[in-house]
Image (cartoon, rainbow, N blue to C red; front, top):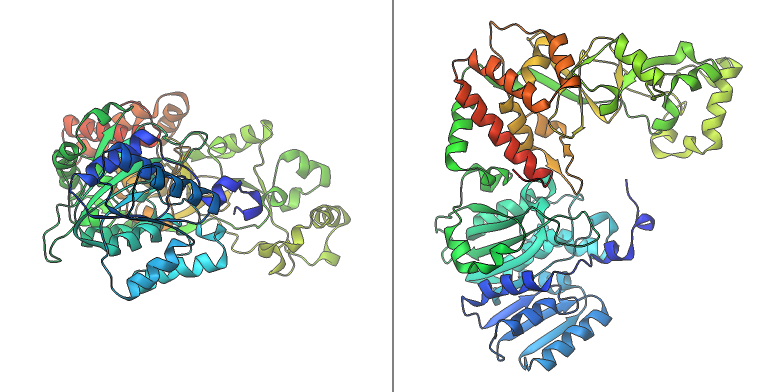
Length: 543
């Protein structure tokens, strides 16, 4: 968990300002609808006010701009004065307070909304701001989560106050496409807007940050009963797209509707024929949803991994051999799909922390060497940590059991199921998997294929570094082909992964698994290409 004290001032105020050329482009599209009133809910130093002027905006347009910080608000006021925007008002204070009052009155006040909302995690907001953020969700009858970010209620309230047929253009975090905490927002946008277009760059637009950003262009429905065109995503590289008329870009981007708008928007990255291929293969009787064929549970939560997960030298020093058990929890612990004695010994020789300490006896009943080790943890204050202090004794970790399959929470290329031959323990950086009817080793082999890899990209989430992460509810939505009569050499697959290319392994696995279900090598290769496209986007690489 990250705390306020660890964060930069810039992060705490959400101050990542939009490059002027992007602000100009967004504003050009919004102004082409000839609005007479415009909202800027977080104007900062006036980048979007500058954009209005750069686009020859009518000086009589009604501008309502909000800014929390007085020094920035003064800059925006000065720009309004310099540009002769006589019908403008820059209001210093919390936009959400004003917005909640407007929502309460069910007001639709503006023809257009532009801007770049603050990127601040809910946990870093002051309590009064947290209350206002939560109130937005409550008033709109939307599910609220404390995992949300300030930009989400900013967009929700802005869309609510947008007039029918009005336009919304903002630069927002790219995570809107896939993070779970933005689901209420995605659903609301799908219901309220006739069309949504995301301009998705390969590059990071904000300097000195890993925060990915996109442009969201949206038109609000004229009639609530109007059929939505859904959401479309157009991928761009560099700033060449700025030469294209934004109106033309918006109209030419094809949206897809249905489950994409109500769920994650990642599918909008794919072409209709790619979605058709995925759906066709997914519908085969031997392709199963993960939740129907297996269970997933989190790994062991220690509350102090450095104390409980140790290298062999610590075990030897304190003579903890009777309390040490094999464990894995990072990709460096297992680069293939088998965790066995050989892998464990190799990890120990490399000095990796692959021993889990399970101590359950009362302190007075323990040998002195174990007591000495426990005291080293207490000297560091580990017994006062929340997860440790709520259990008695603090060093007895609960829920200690292993499963024959494990899966790391995060992956670079694609998730893998690990056949846990040694019955090693896994911490909360990994999951414990139980296959219902399929042999564990076979299940691990079947999991490694292009179709499942695609669904991992569609259902998972990722942040600035491009590492893919899946939580249990997302794993349960993956699809796995499990042919009845198929054989694998799991040791050969394991060595191929460790010594070769994951792309080559997925290709071979796809031909073998999907071919046994009657699909062609061309079908499998197309799936591999789709996966590669999604992975390249996540890692911000050319495809």
